[in-house]
Image 1 (tube, chains in turn cyan, blue):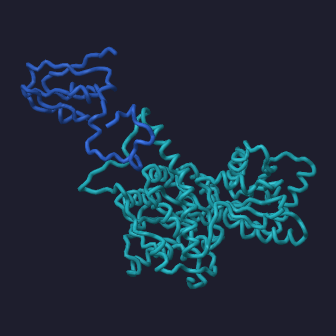
Image 2 (cartoon, rainbow over the protein chains, first blue to last red; image 1 turned 60 degrees about the horizontal axis):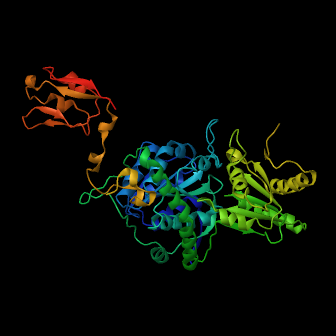
Image 3 (cartoon, rainbow over the protein chains, first blue to last red; image 1 turned 180 degrees about the vertical axis):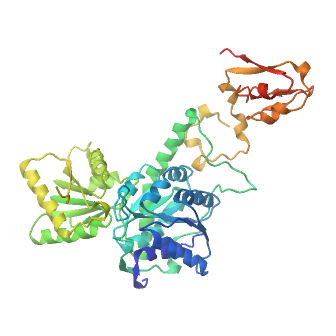
Length: 391
Length: 96
């Protein structure tokens, strides 16, 4: 078993990248991601990590440098947050379409304006259509493990897609947690060397990112859609392998006390830790409540969701992002859409809260569960609402 | 090799990487043209100015050494007519 130490979650992510023996890190520091790349820069500077650290002038350049580096077959890592993720937005599409297995940690942060550097999932939701695999972490251990398995998933020959590892800014990144570190010999067993099948190579020239006129563009998109959708099988396989080597098993949707549960919360990321306590409290009062935690955001785990909610009467999706003027939080609208065609499905209620680093307490999750019981009794429409907002 | 119109989504290399160098040459940019260059070669002094300015790089000396556009790639922009110092080149509209 790996040594359990108290470590800041950002530094644990840097440690995972180091243990994965990355060749290139190209990154621009931005709150709340800064400690991750600061630590990696330090590791490269003091000789602890044999890699190129490319200090760039913006996130757009960071991701562009990552493209070039990954295209040569170098294992490439970066990290960003909030506005930084938005600034590299267009390059994200290029990374996935060119099938470059870059791994990026995202310290989820709110988007301006007004300027807000705190934890929020607006940034990760704004990039959900960029073709990346997106994995969400709930605590520090998951952040460390996810960074490691992200390389294995990304570089699998059947996948070759970039992966984002999402950690709520400050709630995870700046917290010191007891984390079981990974033993290097197990990492080496788990993560084979990266071999890109068609790298940039002067001996064997190739063209990457060539243009595609209307007669061929739709076919390129279909190819990308199929590979991202099919990557789920590989992701599940990698999680099995990870469990065999490191002893921790991950699922596309984690279940917490849903045996016999009628009303169930569905959360993404660090909300899950707080919601577990709320579920425990209400269970102690004899309420039939439970919790589902969505780990895999892209590819979306349709089958796992359908299986997880099959015996549930009321589902409460809690988003930390508002789709302004739209159907509520992104997770709420996607979950509703995924279950729309099911002959038997739970009532689905949506709540948006905790925006821009507003803390959501155990009592608030308890309130949501109680409110929904009332809504069911009164037959209120299955809509979304913002919670914890004054006025 | 299949033409673009015959390619299915299963036919691409990973990331749509093109493994054949210089294959862009096969793309008929001449299809974009609405007018084509014609020549009074008797005035051509073989200076090659038109070839230097051609954005498509499709002008080369013919058997007589006169500079002439390859119509498979010529997009019909007409820059060569402006750059020719002796007025050899003129554009004519092409019908479908």
